[in-house]
Image: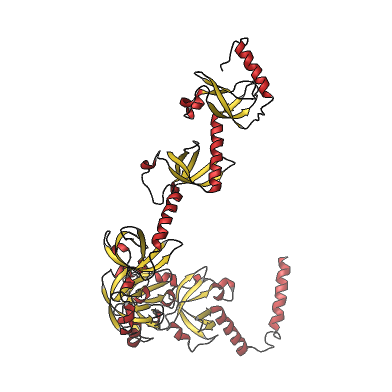
Length: 578
């Protein structure tokens, strides 16, 4: 920094004496904003005189350039600076004009914030999320969020840049020294004062003539009234008694319509209007219609759950998806109809309190399930074509009735494995089946294939446990046993390996060949559970028991001499072997 080199001249000594005399009179504190008189200006520094300080504070010229006040600085003029330190480690006085201006500006902002007064500022630059606003009086920088720039979306704010305008202080952080302002609040306040006076002119029941369509959204249409002095909303439900999807189906921008005032909210400064209420309510004609009768309706709207239709202009009804078809499952109105179609429907419900009318399209046709039951009652046989197959069932379509019937895999065959039986069939195959069950209310029909054939279990109807029957060997398996078919029955049964013979050495399935005729006894028989078990071993046991009972007595064998003789021979044999 620059200093005076000649310390012995008269001017320097006089200045030193003056400082010493004034130091005792003026109280100087760090952190205070003080006035400094410019005593000298060089290319790099500006020297100040501050009463009560031992030496002259110095300000960098660049700092004053940044504050845009260098041109105003003249010798003898005063500058406000912040006294940061009376003496730093180098023995110099540290002051700051920038910090003084910031503190002074912050105090003004605090005062405006406490009194809720607007401040003058100008937008100097854009930043992320908003713009930077400079306080005109103090140069303090503040942040204005993008949402607070205007009360309407702005694509371009170039016309607002660097223009002095009012801002409202909405947030002040004293600790961080941050300030947040709003231009929107000033605009809204001004408009609110004007709008409140306009709102007072309207009351419920007023008719507004020649309102102009300004715009629309998914929830309604906006109109400008009285040459644009006020914008009002006509909600989607208040546009027409007919159901519409969007206002653009009814209006064009610039069109003129009369409106009926239905709500006035002085707090929210909103006026709600209606167009449909200017016309008679078509629901008043509902007495002209009867439940259970057919009427032609016009499709006006399609949804995921059904279709809205009009019986007459403005009188809407709902055709639910479940009421479209008797036979099609998960049917969608969107796939069957289009807006403008006219179809026949039967009115199923009229609720005057809820202003609701329900209709059915399927009731205009005969219930195919009732027709099927009359023509083909349970127990009848009918032909169907396979339309789909899943892991446990087959669905057949009965062409004449357009009904899909259910055929469970367990009802395919009396003998075969259900999963294996399913593999024998494919789509488009035709099957003759028997109707097992018809549920009209649930719209379900169950059929069976095996029921069209003789039940092989009938063969065992007059049989009982321990009865002996003749069977024919179909195949043998050394692990499982024998597959046999009773003579006179088409039922395949398994004789397990442990039921082939009493003697385990003889319990070999390989002893038998396909086509062999053998006898077996019924070990287990349960017709209800359709369970039958055959056993050759049981047959042997029954035959042995019968032979013993016929040809032996309780003493036979024991009193014969051959019995004791055989025992002696056996002992002699064992002795000789030893």
